[in-house]
Image: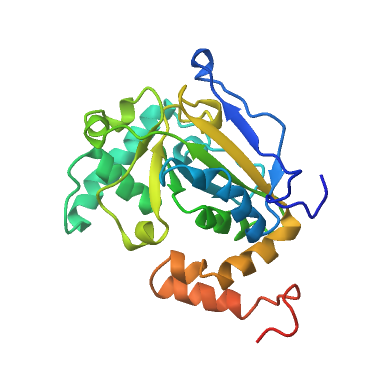
Length: 268
């Protein structure tokens, strides 16, 4: 594939995985891949694919390294002394005991507390996703600048919220999409939601429900700086995604360190 190939190029294809009912647990990605070379090219591709369906049908997740997979944080660390699920419950129960004294409003169930815990960095079975494709691209290009990044696109119908909340998050038998009631400024800015994984150590892309579909686009390391600058120019940056002084300071720090030689010299 040409180094400059963009997602909008007619030669670009998208890596896909589609699970058959008989292969729900271990569906593997094909080796056909597409690349994101520019925001214009990406939006052209999206207008012919992801944007042709109602908003929410497709959700997105960006990873800054091609070597990362869709394993939740609780499944990435070295094996716990007991079982992985036992380690997960121990971490969650400790958070539950200690956090209640710090919360102005108590979560109504374990799902809400689990979402809050993930938001604050606890190891959980939840993976962060977004409705906004450009937000996913930001997270794919912001770090590991010397490594290729990737963006996953997931088509997954959501179960009714009432049905999900009748299930215990620690006893689900297949992945589910979850929209938390507690919407923080960061979740709102990032248009976020979660996918709760059933298999803690198995990448989500290898454990899809039969009616879920996943695609993957890669981002060459050489295009990361260019894409991040394009995102910045259209308002997708640290201070828009991380509301508050920390996000503002991070955006200003990056803005004054970047040198965009790829922009026209006539630009003002």
